[in-house]
Image (cartoon, rainbow, N blue to C red; front, side, top):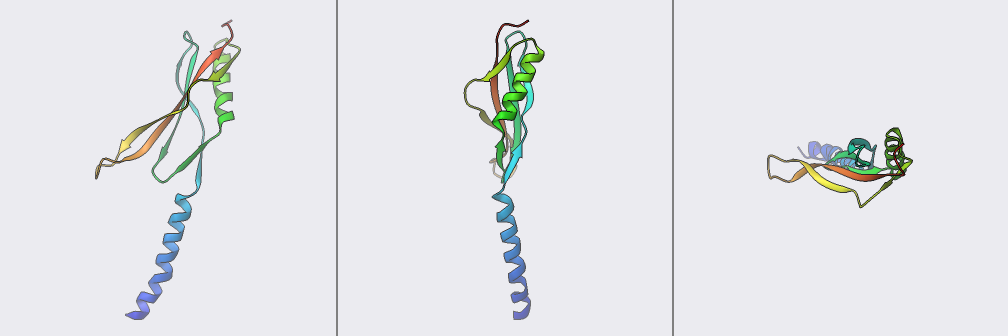
Length: 114
């Protein structure tokens, strides 16, 4: 019996180490257009992440995406306004704690629409 317990220790430690390593890794997130208004000259970008992920979104990719969207509407460019907003998307059925979030950034289109 003692031999079996000693054999399980390395496996348990390996699993614990693996879980810790995965949980501590940054997860690259890509901004996606999630809304906006051509008439108002606004663009909304979002990404989602789940519990144990450490999201890392590329600000420049978001800026480029918003600029491209505004330019497709005839504006010269785009500029972020305010800080990105994080909202709970899904909750655990066990205790009601949040298990996934949506992060949203808002942009205003610049220049007169052509």
